[in-house]
Length: 244
Image 1 (cartoon, rainbow, N blue to C red):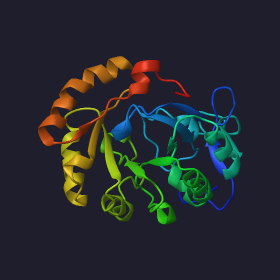
Image 2: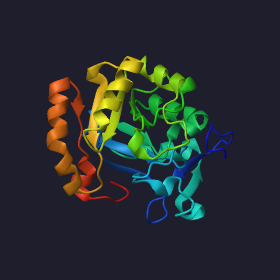
Image 3: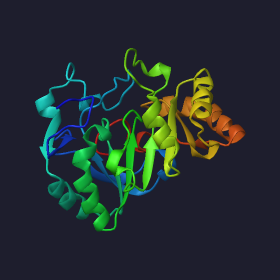
Image 4: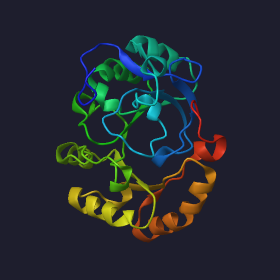
C-alpha cells in the first residue's frame, strides 16, 4: 500500500496489540475535547509523517518494528461486529494516520453510524476527509509543529488544513513542548482562521512526570488566550502502554 495516499485495497490495515490481536479496545478518551468519555478505539496502521516523539511508532516505523508482527488486515464488517459488542457508544478512529485509508473507512463508518454510534477521527491534518467529511461527528486535527522533526515532509498542507478549519466540528490539538511553540500555534491559527475555542493545547509527554511539569504553565496560557487545555489521562492513569 502507498503510505502517502489512500490505498486501493478493501480491507483496513490495523495495528496489533501486544498479544497480536487487532488493536480495537475500550477505554476512556484520554485527550482533547472528549477527554473522559467512554470510547472504543480502532487504531489503524501506517502514517505519512515521522514524528520523533511519536508514541505509536509501531504503526509505521518498519526500521524498528516488524511490519508482519505489528500490522493486520480486517474487513469493515468484522471490525464493526467487534465494536458493536462493546458498551461505549463513542468510537475513536486513530492511528497512525487514519485518512490514508479514508476510502476503506467509508463502509465501516456507515455500519457504525447506522447502529447509532458517535464517531471521532484523529488525524494529522495532511489529508482531506473526502467523502467521509459529512459523516464524522468530531474531527481532532493535530497539525505537527516544527519540533516534531518532520523535515522534508509536508506536515502543513494548505488545502486539507483549510478544509478542516472550515468545519465547525473540527478541533485543532497542538502538542506543545515549550513556550517557543506558542508563536507557531498563533501563526497557524491566524493563517487558517481557527477560532480560539477550537484550539486545544496538550503537553508533549509519555510519563506523568513530563505531563505534570508542562501542564501548569500551559493551562495558564489556555486560560489567558481562550484555548482548551488537554492532558493525557491514559498516561496519567495507566502509563505508556497499548490498549488503554
